[in-house]
Length: 460
Image (cartoon, rainbow, N blue to C red):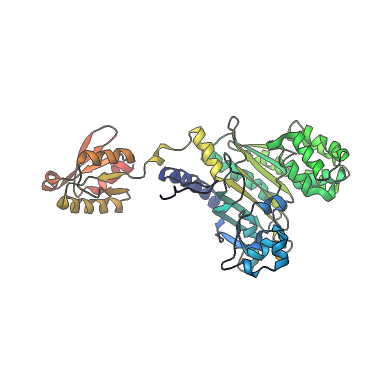
């Protein structure tokens, strides 16, 4: 007996309706990317193992899908390494490639390899799938699309302002109003770590802090203790957890806390400029909120960081995020190239829009017209009619067999086709075709040479 087929956990099949909805989101995002002057690139689905490893912190490295070398890879491993059963030393010897974890590190690699062909500042967008060996749950998958936009070669904080506007423009266009764009600055977190005496544990501090929304304050503090951050240091960081008030009020409190930290004060200054400029320009429907506990656990962020939360009442993780990285290309040998970028969480945006009923009804229609099949002679004429309709921009098709008319109508109804064309013997004799509007049940006849008029009628 054949084994029942299945797919890996954390992956999904997509129906035609689901693909149409996802493409709607992608088209909207892409439209605004291009309006803001970003250019498209694509990179391979897998990279060299060394390109990805060590770029995302220990937790990120564990979530990277490694690809086994082809051939008899085990025989090439020395006995000492093999018998040690240490995955950290064994994996590099049996895996030279890995599936990309995100689009940012491959982009940095792209910039370094193509630096002589690129005009800086370089504004790129990229919409491709990524893979993470994460624990599957609602809104968290092992294979998912990222929609990224980055600018490299520009230090100006106007880029951060532009990304806030870009988020606002896309979510407003999608009808997803009331999202909150959270903002913080990694320099502030570096300053906090410095002030509390945990500068050498900055990565552990930010990785733990990044889990605040998921596990709560007490669990975050427990993790910090486990990572070697003392109780005294955690107590000094308490103002982070208690911070409240407007953005201006929080920034004033941070100035007092970070008065003796040069890098911390620089972070405050950068946030002041970004927030003031956004306030001056205004937003359409999104809200910009300072969140001093926002950490973004990835190692490469060095300046402003963003995370987008769904509208109130929708239980979903972040639907977007990003930030400033001052020297990401330095890991590949190209020093002092600053960049900043954001990502849209396509799959989570899809789930939120589905929950709120924000997809247009027209997306359920994949075919405008279906011609019924009344036999060989009629089908030949119908094929010509279908070809004419397609040339006029109408999504048209002919039912492939001359089965019962009732069955053909049932097929059209299930497909959600709004118009059905009848081109039988009687219509052939009168050089006409009859259109039935499925919703109203009404009929209308057109001359066989009036295809353009019919197309105009249904497309307008």
